[in-house]
Structures are given as C-alpha cells and as structure tokens.
Amino acid sequence: MGVIVNRRLDFIESSYTDVLELLGRVERFARIHKAMGGASPSAQHAKETGQISRMVSHLTHALAWLLAQQALRDGDLVEENMGDFNISEKDHKTFKKQSAQENQDMPEDLRTLALEVERLFDRVYALCQMPKPAGFPHRRDQLKELYPVV
Figure 1: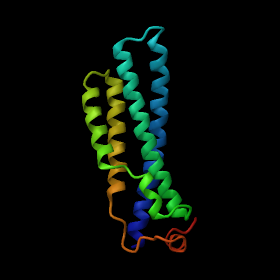
Figure 2 (figure 1 turned 120 degrees about the vertical axis):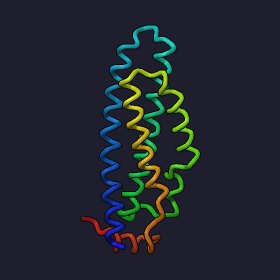
Figure 3 (figure 1 turned 180 degrees about the horizontal axis):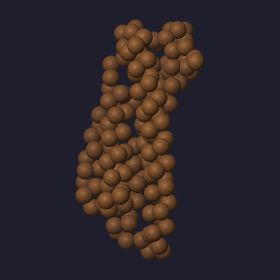
C-alpha cells in the first residue's frame, strides 16, 4: 500500500506545481490581453476575457483540491470534510463543454493555453475520482502514520 500512496502523493505534488505554473502563465496572458483591449473592448475581447476567467476559476478549484489533499496528508483535514473541495462530474462536464464551444473562436495562443488548462483540469479530476487506497485513513492518528511529515 505504501508504494501506491507514495505514487499518488507524487502525482498530487507534481499536479500542484503544474497548476501554479499554469496559473502564472494565464495571469501573464491576462495582463497582455487587458493591455490590448484598449478603452472600448470588442465583443470578441469580452469573450476572450470570459474564457480567461473560466480558466482561472477551474485552475483555482483544482488548486484547492490539491491543497486539501496536502492538508489531509498533514492531518489538518479529515476525509469527511473533503466534499467541499471535490470536483464534481457536473463541474468537469460543464467546463469541457464551455471550453469546446469557446475555443473555436479564440486566437491560437489563447486556444493553446485553454487546452493546457483543460488537460490539467482533467488530470486533477481523474485524481479526485480515484478510489482511495485500502486502509485510507479517516482519523488524525492514522493520517500521521500513513503520511509522515518529511
């Protein structure tokens, strides 16, 4: 069981790093996009701003789930409280549908960024849906045994 748990933790850690990196790229893109909008942004500019907003929202949701996993590992959160952080199937499907519709009309650089966000959100959603390893802890003392602080 330890190998499965450690691989899951490694995957969570790498996903956390990837979300932070992608959030930074989206933020830099948003700054440039805002500067290009001028005093009277077009309808297309407004659609692009909406897509950027959705990307940030979904990356933030993914980040919250990943941080909750770290809190679970550290014993600061118990499994019963994870419901608020989970990514629902409805959230996932809605994001995929919106992305597919919006990406068709987007410039290439924004479309590429949106696809990266979608792939990362898919990865975190898959992690969220994974069954917990046998004996997954539910009490703080079990968490400390399974996830020793390094």
